[in-house]
Length: 440
Picture (spheres, rainbow, N blue to C red):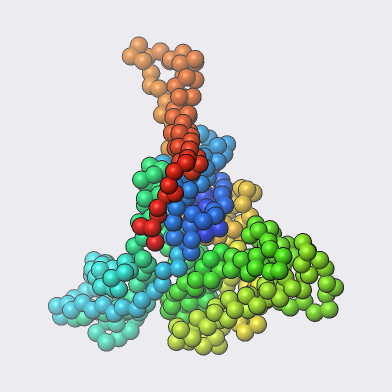
């Protein structure tokens, strides 16, 4: 890398759309210099974009706010990396074998062939493979982690194929590329990127579980002996607790129920606490509802090692917790009753130079940014074009320069503004409601 560059990432979830821009220094240091977010409502469900128009409008708002940040110096976002999550994401184990001529040296090309064959492996017709992560290699009957350079007549590998329903990726492309005209520079599975960012070898080798507790889904990634053993998405999240509160005797709007949950809720029973009235409801009744659902979610999380063929005792590094669901008071302690648990933290390799979004909320998008910085040399931002010198070599008049720069600055803004105007007109126009059944 011979120059400083900027990359941008979006994390589209059921509760919010989070965008961030990072500067990749020549030293490799990742510096998040801008971050913005917009709440989502029904446009994204269980991590899947359902309403393309609404989601595109909110993404456009995030992009526009990012571009207004003075730190970017007038740069425009032309491409983005996308963090992908959703309830259909999970892992499928697959063994791939290549037969080789006797005493063939295993090269990078052979490992690439093995990986490509894994990516092309047939899976359920309702799913597509988005990544293939090697677990172990067998070279002429001997298990090893780094087979490159060995002589062999055969090599096989067990891969964890990361699969999902095709509409998860397709709706991202339709929203970002087709509706907004932004270049998609890469789509990254957020959970896998987060594992690379926040877990250390000291976590993965003995065994650990990374849990991302979101609004409508909870992902679990289990590592043992240094590699991924199991990955799954539980279709439950913190919004289920919020919606439980809306069904109490005194009806609550979801926004108010969310506020009560985050400010007054407790995932653990409160003993000896004085009963208080909160919007016509006793707080002990509120917490009874929260505790019941929190314990159900915790039980599902703690059951995942069993599905991976492991016991909790075989994961001595414990559980590493991330996601907005763990902001609920004492939720980390609830899952930590049976398994040692701690909160995920950004590593020193990532610096946050913006206070617009709390650092704890940036872990997912920071993971996508780091994956983009490590795996590609793409540039996501561009400076607006400047007029060149006239043929006589004299500099253009200042007034002309200002007009050209202003025109360039407003060109994209006008485009987004016109789109947003059309979206608002369409949303409130009389007539039949949009039919998005093809997205289900």
